[in-house]
Amino acid sequence: MRAVLSQSLNSSTLPAFADVQHIDNEELARLLASGATLVDIRTEPEWKETGIVAGSHLLTFFDDKGRYDAAAWLAKLGSLAKPDQPVVVICRTGNRTRAVSDFLDRQAGYKKVYNVKYGIYGWLKDKRPVEPATQTLAACKS
Image (cartoon, rainbow, N blue to C red):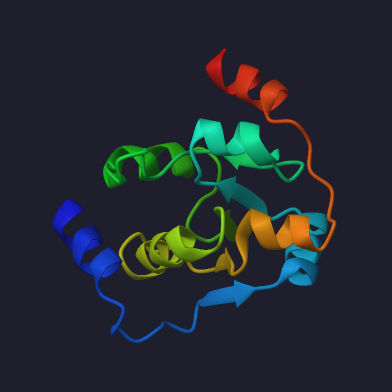
């Protein structure tokens, strides 16, 4: 799986599959209101720096050196959302989540994948609400 993800993550010429939707903040708000699972794939320092969208599940994909363990990450995601449920992924600017959303669609079999195309920075630029990550982080660690 690691080799396949590397290929997917490193290839910007692959055609986009119809099931990955690159969404704006209005669509993110609508999906959250409908109960979609939002996964913030950033690192802990990033969460602490900007805060998080309320209801986010904090699940780092790439570490600070760009390394990842796709199988372990996918196992954790499976406890949050099944492949037939909508999953929204968010990062800082939408770049990392573009690769992760393609992976979820192409390799992991998720049917409804949404990438927040401008990430948390776009969310903040639109003056959308965030909450401190501290309570969510404490719950994740316990």
